[in-house]
Amino acid sequence: MKPHGSARKWAVKTAVYVVLLALLLTLVSGSTDWTAAWAYLAFLTGIMAVSGILLARVSPGLLAERSQLQPGTKPWDKLLAPLVGLAGPLAIYITAALDFRHRWSAPQPLWLTVAAFTVAALAALATTWAMAANRFFSTTVRIQADRGHRVVDAGPYRFVRHPGYASVILFDLTMPLALGSYWALIPGAATCALLVVRTALEDGTLRVELDGYADYADRVRYRLAPGIW
Image (cartoon, rainbow, N blue to C red; front, side, top):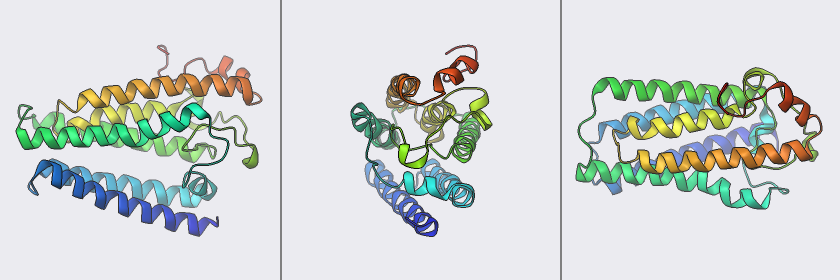
């Protein structure tokens, strides 16, 4: 796919995703007066637009790679990728919307909402940094021999081996608080647990199948959190 075609496809998918998410949150919450939801939708639109514009400039081939399920995806990731990329976020959104509708959670202090949006923004920027540094940042786990797959040790990959997963975990844990729902932390935590499993499986795959990755893993010891794991 040509770079400009990939950028257009990214933009269309982003617009459709945000519109469908707005409909979902409105229908499940039963209200159009959910301020946190509208703030989150505006925030999400902004970070997705920034990410798409940046990648269109520095790594247009990655937009094409991430636009569809690619051949060679590991069988286990055909299950995990939809769970962490679609089912998990949907569970967070639906739980948060039901929470707003039924008032399960106590009112959240403003400072916590601001902190949640701040951390989510930093996590989104870190993900974009990882994607810009790594043109092999695919949607699913596969060895991209067709794209000259090699080890990337620049940018955030100097600090941890899977900075994208680390950032998404932070985002998924702050998303419920940005929407004002403590209950949505439950599916958020479950999604993060699956992301940790996926990180371990991907790391094992790369050690065995990607030339130079084992040496890189010896240099950069930690997968997600320096000094922890």
